[in-house]
Length: 252
Image (cartoon, rainbow, N blue to C red):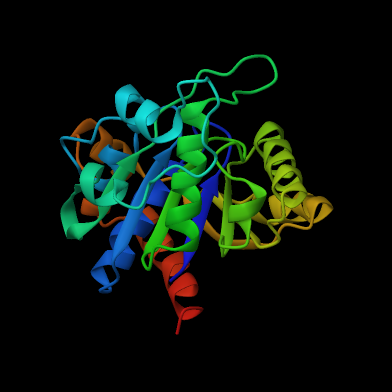
């Protein structure tokens, strides 16, 4: 089963892409797990789930029980194989959603039971779960590690017209390559006549473009109406469907 991590600068539309791809894979008959690993935690609305699950990091007693230790030493391999069934919420098209939550980080990063727990869960869903997994990431690779990257089939980086978005894509790819990710694809959102210029600038980072999504007022209306973007079958959803078909064809 395909495992896709989706990243990009905040506000570029990666959550819309993640939620729509998850729904499209589910409509094709796949068992789909969507994971919200972005601190903004908006994937539920993109999926059309009105009552999202609590972030896993709020279950402090569970985390301490599974990953903590009375002596203050956290466990590197806590039990996580029951988490999806116990704490996931099933939404439209039978997509299951888990919300990771945020971990308080010190200056050099967090080495704590919560961090250990989330990394163990990520390893499990990417390497062992026989489902399509769609990860809505923050603009980085903090939730991933070297032990899980071999299970990532694609890291899709969403960019929009603008130098900062393109530079962020380059940084994300650099971080990803440092931990072993080698399969990247760029999706250009809010695309217009500048698509060819963006593709040219991305060549510096050796990042191929796998699709583009036009600006679409239907997505704005969907947000205002508090419904999943896929319920508005406009130009943007049509373009995401084309991207989905490219990805699903690689599975056949």
